[in-house]
Structure formats: C-alpha cells, structure tokens
Amino acid sequence: MSGAPIDALNTGLYEFKQALLADSLARKRVELALVTFGPVEIVTGFTTVDEFDPPHLKAREMTPMGKAITVGLDLLERRKQVYRDHGIQYYRPWLFLLTDGAPTDPIDDALRQLHEAQDQKKCTFFPVGVGEADMSVLKKLAGSAPVWKLQGLQFRELFRWLSSSVSQVAKSQPGTQISLVKPSDNVLRIEV
Image (cartoon, rainbow, N blue to C red):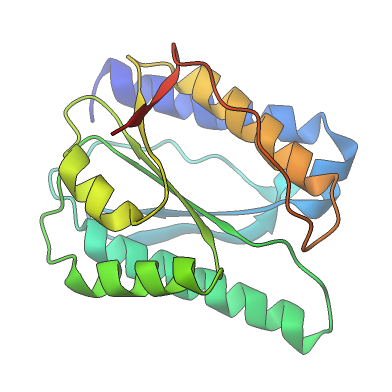
C-alpha cells in the first residue's frame, strides 16, 4: 500500500481517534493497540484513546501477516490477563486486520491460533481486504467470521463505522451480546 491508499489510511486512523475522543464513554473504556507487518512491530501497545497517537504508516515490501496475527493475539491475551489479575471485567477484544496483499510468511500457526481464539470466544476477528488483497487467504483466516472488502479508498468511512461500532460496544455491559450496525455496501462488502 503506497501513495494515495496509505495517505487515506493515515487520515482514517487520525479521524478514528477523533471520533472516539468525541464519545465520553468510549474515551474511558476503549483501548487501542497497533501492530504493523513488514516487519512485524508493535507500534502502539494497549493505550487509552486519549493517549493513542496515530502513527504515520509507511508502505513496506514484505507482508509477514502470519507473524503479525500471532503477535496481535499474544498482545490481546496479555492485556486480558492484566484485567483478570485485577478482577476487572472486560469486553471481548477485537482483532482488526487490514491488508492490501498476501502473506509472505507461513500462516499455518496463525490460522490455528486464530480459529482457536474465535472458537473459544477469546476475540472477534474483522478481516478487511483493500485493493488487490488476497481475499482467499482472508477467508481461510476468518473461519466463520465474515470477510470484508473495502470499496475503493474509503478508509475515512471505514473508520467512522468502526468508531461507531466501538462506541456502541462501550455503552453496553461486558458480556452483553449486541448487534452492530452493518456498514454500507458502498464502503464495505462481505465477500462470499
């Protein structure tokens, strides 16, 4: 991802933060972490919305997606353990994967861990393909979760939907099942 797509993604991340900051409850309850791949790097460990500093992402050549997923899952589990250690209830975390390519590393371990996490309700997985993303790989990773395809460069709209969904969850009680508003097909389409 380079040029206009990466610029649109960076703008979308900034607006995502601003939308969450505007929601007083989400600002208190939502924590964000960001893992990039190519190379795999925890750019931001879990932090509150007001402390989240959207990084300026840059295009990379490699796409070690499998490693990034396992690092993300480990990061989620460590954060949940902190909550458990302190007796704090928490919402089921979301693992949001955004890619415009195909993995350049083996994904078997990530696939196994991700499916196990989904089956055990340890996280909710949102795979989103952009541009020329290998949707067949995302479908494998998704298991029973829907696979989304971003229409064009509508990162701003994607992050508006995401912030609205996160805010909706933040207003609920941990453990409560809620139905998220489906994004417009003009922004995201479910791949079948």
